[in-house]
Image (cartoon, rainbow, N blue to C red; front, side, top):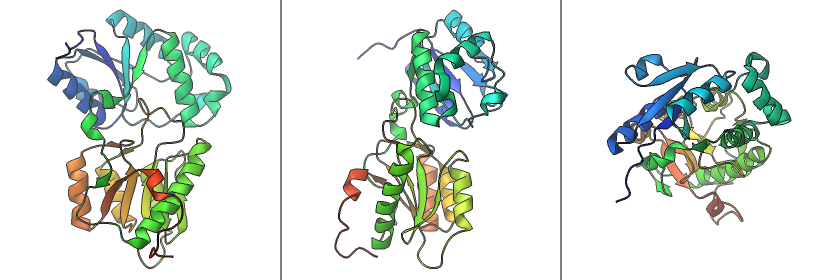
Length: 289
């Protein structure tokens, strides 16, 4: 058995339960950790009793200094964070230098910015990692997770959704789209999946419900930045009248998988982990048009 490193890992914690699950996994394996709470996103009550600091996004310089003093070299970026306006960051002196090094990528899409930030972290001597190092069970191999399976019409919508999500992902816009009967009801941008689903619900057509498709962007760093789905995603899909959710196998973080499946089964919604390349090409015979 490989011995567990006693060098503390730093959990860069946004909102939601995923940072807590990473911390629990660290405790279970005996790996020490420290926590950097992102101001306005992490819940301080979740980290009482832990070695922690809170910092705003524009004070990266102070956070890096604290992490070096704590002896943490590996960083796990995890949790919900809404990207702020570049003008609201109020960077400290070091963060201003980082922004200057990032340049125009700070004004580009999320993946361009995250890629640049990871490069800065590496240049500062850190090793950014993803939560899947500790939460392999949060991903799913290809297959159906629910009792309900997609019909031919839903499979056709999945195929269309893959085309759309790959197109917007190539321009670093978003990771998801909602398609119903071949019509694109909504694509994901800066508003996030929950808001996209709420918007799609108001645009739903009569007839069979559509599908939400979530994929990794082309060229996206799978180690650090994966799309996430959870019970709220399922609730949003149900409220929008969708038939199901298709997501990339081993390419999405499933938060509270059992609750997701339970909610989906209760509503007759399907959850399907897909290999996108298996769903492209000529439409299979008998598929709905």
